[in-house]
Image (cartoon, rainbow, N blue to C red; front, side):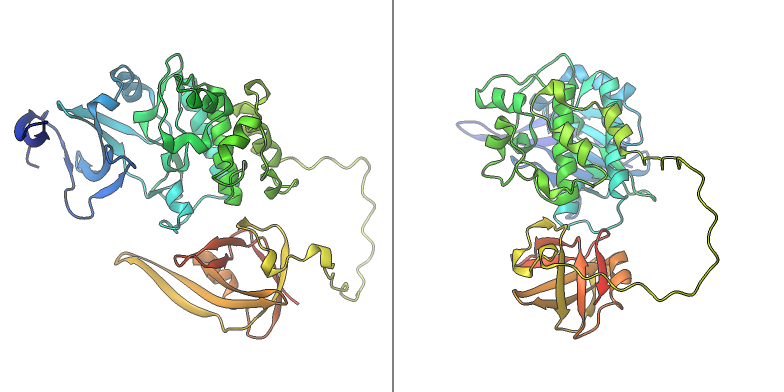
Amino acid sequence: MDVIKDLKVKVKTESKEEEVVVALPEMAWKIDSSEGGVLHKNVTGTSWVFRGTFNQQNVAIKRVPVDEVEETKQNVLIGELDHKNVVKLFRIDGNDLFKFFILEQCAASLQGFFDQDYIGPMPSHVQVLSQLSRGLEYIHCKGLVYCKIKPENILISLTTPVIMKWADFGLTKLTDSSGSVDNESSFWMAPEVLAQTNKNEICAYSKESDIFSAGCVFFYFLTRAHPFGKKSEIKKNILEGNPISVGRLANDHFANAVVVRMIAKEPTDRITLAEVMDGLKPKPIPPQPFPLPPSPPAVVASPPAPRYLTGAEITPISGLEMGVNSGTIHASVISKPKDEVWQRNSAFNIKFFTMLLRDDTGVIKAKAFGDNFQRFFRLFQLGRVYAIKRATLKLDYHGERELSLVKATTVQCL
């Protein structure tokens, strides 16, 4: 590998554009400068993440302007953060203009999963929440507060099985320090932090504010809806402690009690991460108070009569809401399920199928990918009526409503 000694950089001044030579440290890493080498950049275009190599292994290299990096936290980040649910930081290098963070490479961010840029394997819902809780508790135990929790900073590993990881160390800070806020994180801020932001005050983040932000992300992951409503009203509702969308997570959902306590308005009312992880554990079946009677002799019985849903339990197609719908639709298949292959690149493709469903209130396109393709493709037949529960409503690339059959979806032929 060639060692880069110097780098010519064009610098614009008020009167002219000139070239200066910036000394680079000798390094055992290299940035991929090809067309596909850029993995991510922030909205302001100052921070970029590239593909690269470090000691002959594939890595991600984050380039950040030096004035956006706090020098005091580098030794802590290199020496102490070592956890399977935290992205590994191998090394930091730099020059007069940039710091280069050499990081473990991952498949995508959680935001990429939400946007369907990543449609690969994922852990179960309870595993996602448990892994992220363990990683965040580890960060807190090291005397750090994460601060800028949002879906873009949560990564999905390239390993098998897939593991969730916290990332973006450029925004992590020491517990007893404080700093300013970027606008990207505002929808996930705790009310006490958001109130300071609105007053242009320096924000004093805390472990409790991290827990609030993580609770909002957890809720969005489970429902594809923000607990505090639409974008236009999120900040107002956070400040007022009014989670208007919390009803989207069913009362009997395994994470309901945990997430609701994570997003409490007052920091002192919020659940701790230890309590979060305990609340996510499977609950043991209580012992029977009395011995069970011996089983009666086997008899041949008629199958039970099917249970039919009442009108109040049925959700019409026209009444579906964005995100996971806990209700059940009754709809007939009006187009034969069509199987296709979605190919992202030469090494990655996945099977899916589409079909049209209709009830008395309208028509909607339905789709299933990957493992869900295998579950549902042969089940649907043209002209038959089905009860479909817990499907996810989203917008396709053309902005049209689309029903996605996901892991939580159940289907019954009527």
